[in-house]
Length: 402
Image (tube, rainbow, N blue to C red; front, side, top):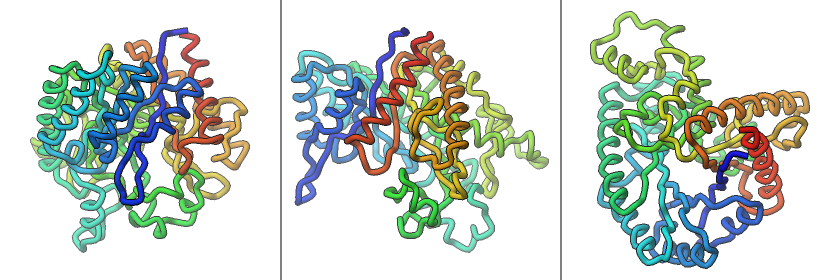
């Protein structure tokens, strides 16, 4: 078997009656019991110095080191929705822990980059008369706004990376999916369609806005610019699959633009993407996952793994969101797909997709994978353990052949 290390995305915070965060290792313990190391999710509450200190003491007692961390800004505007000083302060807290520990507790921070608009800004804009004729995928931002956002985030990323690198911590940028769920009318759970209120995995969430086309940066071809052509990349298999699927519907091979400006043409040459306010983001051609992964050969230390086959799927006349599915193969049970025929077809497609993506990643030098499964509100317990054990076993059945 190829030497891979497997992780599960794990929270570390609970809150007391006054709303104060405190360290809770329950999710880490649940993962360790089935052989999954923790990838710590650094929510704002988790970045509390007291929580970080408790985490480090716990990890040291468990003889666990080199833990990857994750901070996300997906759909939240600027890079981690914060400024450079605050980001450096977060890095400083981790550096202090490393210096006090007998081993390096934290060695990697995986970041989502950010977006042109926050979810709130996007919903506010689409409520204005100017945008009434826009489809869910039509952009509410200009090319210039997109490029200014991309350049600004790039500047902060490179500065933070340099700052963290001085203390032995690598900044890793995760690709974001170009998505087109566009299925619910607001961020209020009660305003969701009946189908999604009944979805066993997503009914408890309220984060899906009317349209997820908010101008996320770092989806595909802009990754190299964003990382200065040198920083490491975390390839999220599902996000890359989303971008591939999106490009099948939104590309310049199917929709020709006759009045392209010089600025639009330059960006198209550089980033293989066409952006104009009032149009969907359009890729120059269908995205090839092998080409994208090959671009970052030797720069992909870690990947994120989920069981998505399609962004959305029809199951007994109900539309369901496909992301963060369990990794089920063959005739494996998957309670989130009611139709047995569909379950078997998707299981076969899922195995074929993961065999392709994991081989590409392995050949590009990746040897760590994080299981990112959304199983509804349960983050521990029998269901979480069952589907993560099953997913881990299936992923290892592929890796074992390398």
